[in-house]
Each structure stands twice: as C-alpha cells, then as structure tokens.
Image 1 (tube, rainbow over the protein chains, first blue to last red):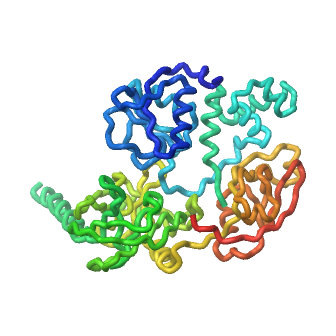
Image 2 (image 1 turned 30 degrees about the vertical axis):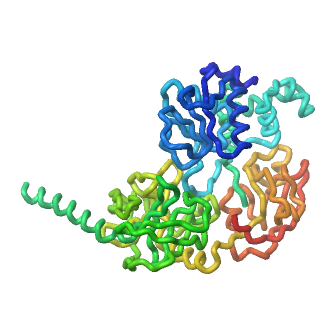
Image 3 (image 1 turned 90 degrees about the vertical axis):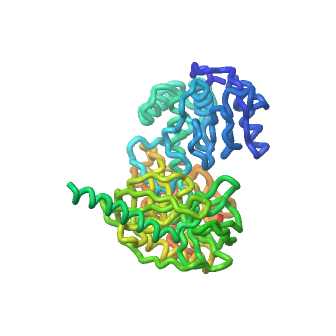
Length: 185
Length: 300
C-alpha cells in the first residue's frame, strides 16, 4: 500500500473484528491485514476491537465503532470512514487515546448544507484526486488521464491549495470529508 | 439573605413540581434488551419519536409513565422532518399539551424516559430561536430551536417544555450532538400526514449531486462559475429517464441556478410532483437542455 508508507503509526496490532454482515466482515478483515495488522478471534488476545456499528456490550478493550448508535466508545468513526483513518484510529486507541473524526458524525439531524464557492474543485481536479486515491504516482496519473506530467503537477498543486493540505494522505482525508457534501434530490 | 435562599429553594421546588406534572408526556421505546429511546406522547394513542434513531421495525414495545408496557405499531416516518409516528394499541391517559413559543434565553425542560416508567429531566436555556429552516433530507421545519443542554442518547425524542409547562416540541440530536427541538408547529403539520399516508410526499429527480467549480473555458458560456455534478443516478428515476448521465454538471433547474442546494430543493416541493423540470447540464464541454418529469420520492 503506498498510502500506508506515508503513516508511521503502529503496525502489527492484534485486532478483533466484529461485524454481523459477512461481506462487511470480509472487507474489514482485508483492511486490517492490508495495513499490517493481525486479526484475532479471541477477545483476550486482542489489543483493539474493530466493530461495524453497535458491538456486543463492554469488551474491556478499546473499541473502534464504525457508525452505530453507541458514540460513547473510545473510538468512533463514521461507517464509511476511509481506510487511512481506520488504521490511524486503531494505532491511537492501542496507545490509550480517544478517537473522533473531525467531520460531523452520521448522527445528527442537520440543515441542508450550503457550500462556499471558494475552493470548489473542478471535474478534472476530482479525476486527479481519484487517481491519487488509487495510489497512482504523478507519472501514472498523466498516463491514465492522457495529459502531460506538467499538467498533472499543476492540478495536484491546485488541489493541495484548494483543500489546504500538504500531503497526499491529508488530501484524501480532506476530500473524503467533502464528499459528504453530496445531496440526493 | 433569607429571602434569596428562599427564592432558590422555591425555584428548585417549582422546577421539580413542573417536571413531575409533565412527565406523563415522556415514554420509552425499547430497541433492545439494554437500550431504549424516548418518545413524546402527542395524543392519547399517538407517540412521536426521532426518525434518525428509530430502528426500521413495524412494531415496538413502549414503557409508559408508571412502568406498564404497551405495544405500538409504526404508522409512518419522515426523514425530512426527523419524525416517526407510533400508534398505541390502547390509548393512554391523555396529557394536556399546550403549544409553547421558543424564546432565546428562556429556560427549557427536556424530559426523557428512563426505560422503567420514570422520567429524566434536563434544564437549560433556549440557545437559539431562529426562523424556519430546511433539513438536509429536504424537510421544512417551522423554527430553528437549539437548546443549551446535553442529552443522553436514550433521552432523544422526549418532550421539551417551557418553564410555564407549554410544549416547545420534541428533542433530537443535530450535528455534533447539539440538541435541537422539532417545533410544535412542525409536529402539528406532519403528524396528521403520517397518520393518514405513512409518509410525506416530496419531489424527486433521483440524482446525487456534488458542487463543482466549472472549468474556465465553460464559465462564460454557462454564465456561472459553479454547478452541481451528478455523482450517481437512481436507475429508472426521473433524471435517468430524461437522459442525464453520471458526470453531467447541472447548471440550472427551471431557470433556478444550481449554485446551492437550497434553491434547488425548493424546485422539488410536493406541489411540483408531476410537473416538468427543465434541466440545463454541461456534458463534455457543451451545454444541453433535458426535460425531466418530477416524481414523488419513493418511500425509503
């Protein structure tokens, strides 16, 4: 994983994955392994519990809950939190910290968002961002979008400026947050 | 000094007496063996709850004030105003509710149910009493009421009263766990619709939109600097049938420029169902006109 190398956080944690939906469970297990952790089946052997939605009771281990009603857990992220955030949260929880996402939790009856026109991305910049999210280098992005390397660099710089970030990982987290600004009509 | 002490004691006693007199309006809704939500007894046989927190189920067990269990059926839910309505199998003792007006700075009592027949009480100020607003899910709320207090999750959905004991509305969580009140006027308008139809009709195009900046080359031709990009479409939905495809950038709907969500949502009011939505979209650098027929949003 190219994104993983960006983050010098704890690796090799023992993680107990709890998810009722088998497909979701498989996805979370794959994520845990991809990021260099080990999945365990016994609570006693786990450093952290990764839980899809509401988990079983109080397991006496730090829990990272993805979505769900129980926002009192030590770790709570939205259900669709990106892998990089889940990985960072697992490390932080194992170190005894509390984790919350900066973006609004799914919970909460909110007003219809109104965006400022400043800092909106263009469709091309969104394509470049997608490619960054797939772990592509600038050279690979140029090839995928059939544009010059120079143009890719131009778009990446503009992206960083608009998102107010300095690294690709940061850009992905920020962009993920923004994607909540989708309205179904 | 003696008078001041007396004043405080009296204030405290009055608040406790008020809460005691009003607790008949707070009911508990069991959602699992350990968890419950609160609800507001709106009519002797009708309870309202927070739609966003109520699990998708047809039947619930309520715990009435005093501790008796009462079965109730889900009658309807409206994500737009965050209201769910439950009908009790047997009418409860009616609680006389009078509508209250929110005033910033005034005291408010937020009641919740403790799950075994008792009530929990929170005291705070009305932090904000603003004008009407539109929710993310497209519903209209008559007033924006924010309370300066915090609630436990199990207390959400309970009644909120003024110091005089008049009902401001039902408590719910806004973003970042701020406590909002769904106002009386919204309850009065939406509950009868849910009792009758089970849902609230809303105009629908079947698209998910995200704001984007228009590339410089297009700004002049479009006459605006941003639009809403179609991120996904509901198959067979009104926009899809009109020929909209993912990646199109919507510039306007019926001449309302698509620069913000709110303006656009206004074009999809219930009375627009069955009418035409003239869409102007950008696709691969050119501006196209497409006509969609606004349909009623299907029940979730």
